[in-house]
Image (cartoon, rainbow, N blue to C red; front, side, top):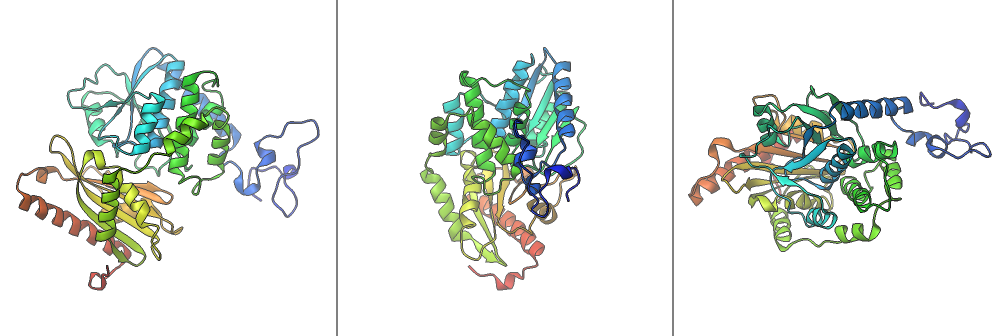
Length: 406
């Protein structure tokens, strides 16, 4: 029997809870089977909530910066929006900032239809007016440019809330890193616990629940990778979300450019030991979101359990970096361990890649070799990075490149 589940609420042999006593409203412990029992005891949930409330109260009257991961996805956008509204309710002004661009059709619809205000980061941005920063859905490793700017401006990181594997120890005042399906799940739980009283008649609260539901659906692959915590969060959010708006957000079609990038990934893929690996060359920053969509598509091929797609992203100011996405259906493959083992770390000790259950991503700066006007130079640069990255993955899976098949 699992530790922490009282014997009196368990059926003998079956592992399911008994029916609640007559006259008593059933709670989660009554309704959930043993295999779906919450991973944290209620006391730990309460302690976490109390600690977050204490931190928010201690910083009342301040101005905070909520930092998204580069090229933000629905989970990080919705979690940041939740943190912004929670902060406002506790007397804290919060701005949301991001690097890169928002290009995925659903992400654009999410921001535009729900009126979520995001600020693109630029080097001239004065960060000294912020008393602290908050990382949501990441731990700083996928928002390096902003993280460095915060360090230069001496703005401390006050909070880290994320559902990915822990990347490094944090000195933040509040750290909540949990193995759930989405950071949206974590914020839904805080809302359910009363950190902000949702009112279905208030438009911004309906928008918040809609955004979090979209983030949860997106990061759990339409609940295919969801756990018990995620389903409970969805049940709570369903009481407040706007189903019509959510349907409009999720009904967006892929752009022509995204389809072209998926086609290129399909043409360039190399299949090795169940891995489908594709380099897709140079991409403009506004097409960055096509990379994970291409990986999702390659994963649907027969006899492929893991798909990896990567390319060089070109920013508006000649900055360049390699960005890649991993998707897997292989239960024994841990994306976080796999990417860290294959790609290693930079000079500061930060990993180039990381992940969670069934998905991961990586980002490698081009640095000194960035830019260049010559097409010959650009192609040589791409060929060098492509060959090196593919070899790292081949070495990791123990594949002999002489046996490569298209």
